[in-house]
Amino acid sequence: MVTGFLKGMWTTFKSMFETPVTYQYPEVKRPVRERYKGRHYLHRYENGLEKCIGCALCAAACPADAIFVEASENTDEERYSPGERYASTYEINMLRCIFCGFCEDACPTEAIVLGHHYELSFTNRRDAIYTREMLIVPVPPNGKPTPIQVEPGKFDKAIPEMENPK
Image 1 (cartoon, rainbow, N blue to C red):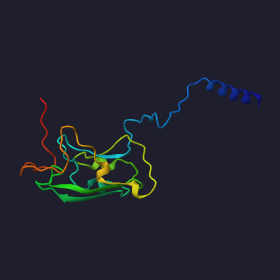
Image 2: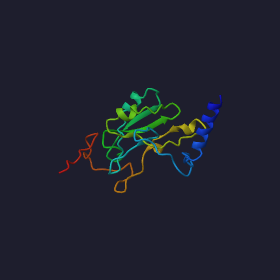
Image 3: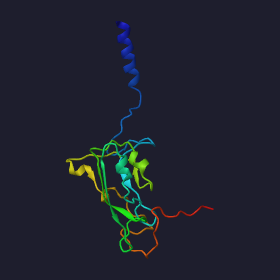
């Protein structure tokens, strides 16, 4: 009985001199692992066009039915993505999402990506539904904001041709 008490006191005494592992949270963010799946983002190409082509494969792959995608047709006067269609409505219900990453795996254009942002809090259910405007990343410095006007016939493929590095 006495040996157990002394062993416990020794453990307590040892831990008094160790450095604490506490993060001062709002000021210092806790680093996450490389494979961490956090908040969703919709990415763009370098020219500013959106990568999402409105195919809804992410919604089909979602086991929690948290994603809703509604596609509309692109025109040469109003072009959002390089394909025939774009996602006019893209919503993710973050209360339903289980952050599995199946939507990221199913996307053929790598438009939807789960980032490392983990500060997700809501005060009501409406705030938990992330819309397309909330998910899309800002326009790159050399790109143009969507929608853009293009000459007819410029974009005829959903995924633009990439230049081969030499």
